[in-house]
Amino acid sequence: MRVLGIETSCDETGVAVYDSVEGLLADRLFSQVDMHARYGGVVPELASRDHIRKALPLIHEVLQAANTPLSGIDGIAYTAGPGLVGALLVGASIGRALGMSLGVPTIGVHHMEGHLLAPMLEERPPEFPFVALLVSGGHTQLVRVDGIGRYSLLGESLDDAAGEAFDKVGKMLGLEYPGGPRVAALALEGTPGLYQFPRPMTNRPGLDFSFSGLKTFVRNTLAEAAASAPVSRQDKADIAFAFEDAVVQTFIIKCRRALQQTGLKTLVIAGGVSANLALRAGLQSMVEKERAQLYYAQPRFCTDNGAMIAYAGTQRLLAGETSSLALDVKPRWPLASLPPLGQSASQ
Ligand code: KG4
Ligand code: ZN
Image 1 (cartoon, protein in one colour):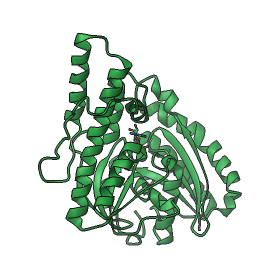
Image 2 (image 1 turned 60 degrees about the vertical axis):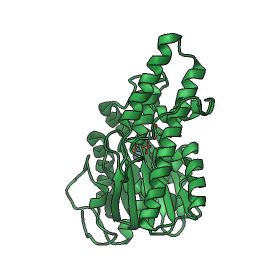
Image 3 (image 1 turned 90 degrees about the vertical axis):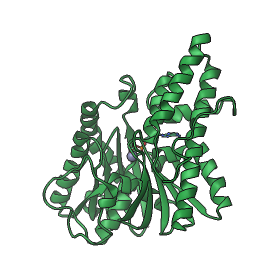
Image 4 (image 1 turned 90 degrees about the horizontal axis):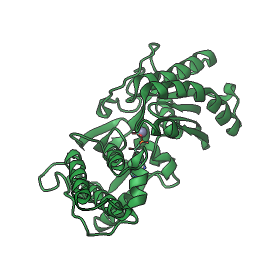
């Protein structure tokens, strides 16, 4: 089965063609970050309009790159939520219209299920069951994964998502949106051990997270530094390092706890923040001590992309699932409410 995947939940238009036998044939991405950067964050209305401009040309391009005419497509997967409602509607409308005109089934994919399954696109995919740390701009969750659609929430952020905290700290440090990769780059120049930032919620039991206190700590540290002298690039790098380190150490503690609590030996990290190299390295040394294995996608499949949607959609279409006729997008949609693979004929 050959599936066209369409991702338009936020500020990236992603498309891909995935073949259940041959694997990923092609993928294309257009990022709107330059357009949103001047506003310091995503402007939903601009995002929707740009998806409209970019989606069809990108679909043409990806079909050509996959050497597949439209008539060679057996199914269409689009992101149905969670995300910005206007942006989701663009991908959903195009996906459903294409599906109807071609007479092929369509499926609305859960964006976080897409992220969660993105490591399956790699040469050495993880095997179920595993613990997944989902860390994106909108979500921070620890999930027990027993199969596709068999998700139990172990813990989540009570306030900001990890990516959101990175982005807000980036703003405080005067970096462009999205701050995550820029904070990480600046942290490389930071001096280890100069600042000690708190590791939120690690000294009490449980697997929930909170990043808003850490964010305030960064703001206060910056204000204190600014009170005595102008804040230098080195000061900012030292603070970026301390912030990133606090986030990484927090994830190490909570992921170790989740592995021990579930007795599982496989940890998967997914979502935009899983591209962070300090996080990957920190978790890698933790899993080695736990005699466990760490899996993640290549960086371009950690952040939003069409390939993960095409992959997740293919699995559900192969199991006989299709979307109902109503054009239904879900800006809010809990991951754990998804049905196990093949257990719903329509959503
Ligand atoms: O998964 P994603 O592309 O979109 C959402 O579903 O939200 O995640 C985007 C988030 C942004 O907050 C971005 O700053 C963060 O992932 N991010 C990073 C890195 N690369 C992307 N955060 C820290 N370090 C990175 N290298
Ligand atoms: Zn995402």
